[in-house]
Image (cartoon, rainbow, N blue to C red):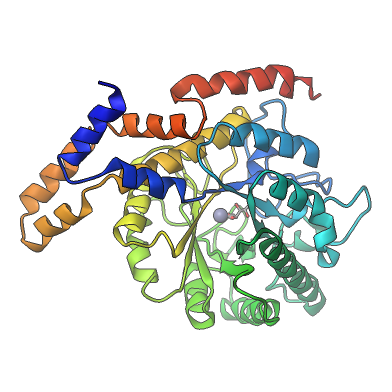
Length: 414
Ligand code: RNT
Ligand code: ZN
């Protein structure tokens, strides 16, 4: 009997139908971040990556322009099962060689991306870029003490929101437009309040224009600390949790933005009591917010288990956020996307009702015993079946395609 038929029987014995899980998996897009393809460089000719972000490694072949980046994304997408979204940053605008300031960006500078997305059946998400820019060099943007610096970044945020709304309207799927700013102090601040008051006012200005939530969903992303903002981050968790609750915004939870021992999965059931929607930045911090490639590990699995157990797939947007320059960048996209999807599939294959019943009845012995047995059920056979049905390589074979692309395309980039 083929492996998938055996797997179906194994799951059926626990009251789980893998067909239902596969249908849910196919219907759940992952937003694939463009910035893994070029180490978060963008197309503005930035000499170094700002905002305390760091992509370490010097693997050859990174994309140098929009055509290369889109070509690389196409190769990655051909190896990732299902239908997905692509997540852009404002720094990936195509300005035809002319310098367009970030506060003057318009949908015209993203036509190339929009046409490409349409042609490939992809939806788009978006991010204003509040780093790698001279006006961010002092470490402050929306909370900068000078009004004219704040004004520039507010206008950038407003411009990006409109671009997001245009993406959403054109593609028929709301564009999650996510605000993350690097603002903070390396060393001990005296006034922790004033920068937060300024950020609050600036965000309210950015979001003042009424735009259709069917086209754009506003998200805000908190962080614990960054390189150069070790002592104080203006946009902390408490700041943005309060903001998202009072302004009815999407709260972004980046898995790397907490103390390394914090349980990010545990947060979902609390915050979803109060905020309308979550954006997940699926990432992997190793000792710090290092943005390693996502793998099928326990913290990632736990996050997806919570999403599925809570029935929140319709209130959670799933996006990837990592950047590793030490391995083939297309492989990095494929590994991380497939790992996130596997974690989601594993959660969808859980006999949750049964586990819940054990818990309600106080049968914690059976709860723990079954959770352990589930770990060695034939998840791999169901995953392979998904890849087969969606016409992407099954198993390790996908790496052959990446190796060929590296030989034929990446290795020719100086
Ligand atoms: C930074 C945030 C943010 C960025 C991207 C590039 O710590 O995680 O999401 O990684 O916007
Ligand atoms: Zn993030």
